[in-house]
Each structure stands twice: as C-alpha cells, then as structure tokens.
Image (tube, rainbow, N blue to C red; front, side, top):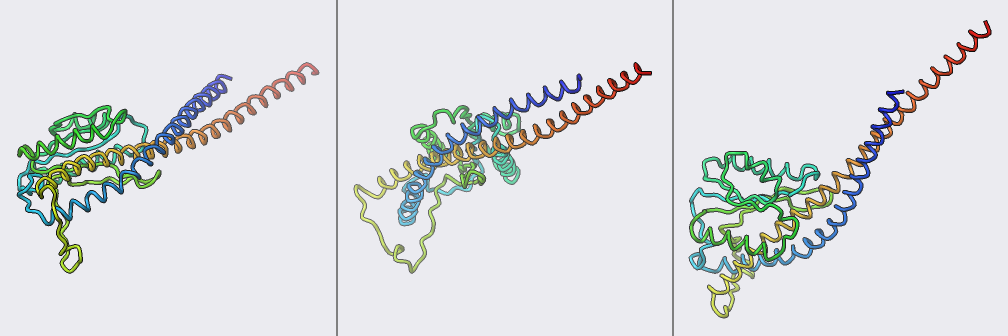
Length: 288
C-alpha cells in the first residue's frame, strides 16, 4: 500500500509540473507573437539602411569617419546576447559555445566582452576573460533608446582608439523551431565592394549639406539599428526556444504520467488480487 501511495504522489507531482510547463508555453507563445512582429518590421529597415550605407561608404574616403578605419590592432570586443532566464532549451548554450570557440580561435588577441543577459554573465564571470560591462535585465524593458546608448558607447570606444574591432554574437530568429547563432562584425564598418559594370557603380550622389555630415549621421543610425535588430532577433529567438522547450517538457511529462499510471494500475491490481487470495484462503480454512 505504501508503494501505491508513493506512485500516486509522483503522478500528482508530475501533473503539477506539467501544468507549469503548459502555462510557460502559453506565456512564451504570447510574447513570441509580439517579438516576431517586431523583428519582421525591423528587418527591412535594417537591410535598406545597410544597403544605403554600403553605397555611400564605397564612394567616400574612409578617412572621413573613424568608424570606417580598418586597423590591425588586436583589441577585440564582443557583444554577446544571452537571456536573463533559463528554461529555453539550447538557446544560451549555443551562444556560450560559439563565444568560447571565438575566444579560443582568437586567443592571441586582447579579447573583452560586453555580456547582455544574466545567463551569459553567470558563465563568463567565472572564466579568464575581461567583462567590460554587464547588461543584466535587458529583456524586461529594452527599447530603441537603450540600443542607441549601447551603439554610441561602442562607437565612442572605437573612435577613441580603445578597441580595434567590435563583433556581436547573437541568435538570429529563423522560426519557432530554429535559431541560428550569428557572429557579426559591427566595427569597423567594411562596405561591400561595388562591382564594375553595374549601373549602380557609376552612379554618384549629390550631398546636402555635405558628404561628411551625411556619412556621420548614417553611421550613427547604423549603429543604433544594428544593435537594436540584434536584440530583437535574440528576444524572438529566446521566446521561440522557450516555447519549443516547454512544449517538449509538457509532452514528456504526459508520457511519464501515462507510464506511472500504468505502473500504479498494475500495482493496484496485484494488491487487490493478493487481498482476494487471502480472503479465499481464509474462507477455505474456516470451512475445513
């Protein structure tokens, strides 16, 4: 009888866990819809921004702006974007592994990190790498203004020759089931080379007020847009990964409940059979 009570207790415990995972799945699904809509709206603007900047920077003198200066220094800064909460499958693990691989492949450089997300900070704070800044709690109220502040800080550090290269590592949202880890160079800005023979190659622009002012404004916006888009991609990816993980956990809990229920029924049947045998044996003994 004690064994039956233990199995029944386990079944109830798993059912309680399943209720939690189902609720978390619904919450993640709700947040995913908003995050997915936000990134779908931001992507076209970011793509067109990069296209215009490429055309502009390809025709300008790179000395016009410090963010275009390609340097041979070894001071590399990584902005890595993780989540503040767990229970999102391999979302954080993929970022951490990619970052660790990057640091290993570039161990001759002076690497430093800006870590967004509590999970990433918990890992890299215990590793031999310099953390320049921690952005813990970004998932709560991240907006365009905060992206602008981060972008301006990175641009200032690069312009003042404190770092030689800035890259971002984040999860790009593909679908609810799929996220892809991206390593993207943010600074220096290296424009795509325009191919000779194409119509766009020979076209130049009329600048108002002047070439340097336009380039300066475009680069400011580029930094804000790229940082903002990366955080939006990460947010949508996190909610998608959590929704998938909680769905899998709910299904696993259901399978466990079915298995425990079967075990409970077998044990209960065996116990009832044993009781019946004892009753029959007792009745036979009284007859004798």
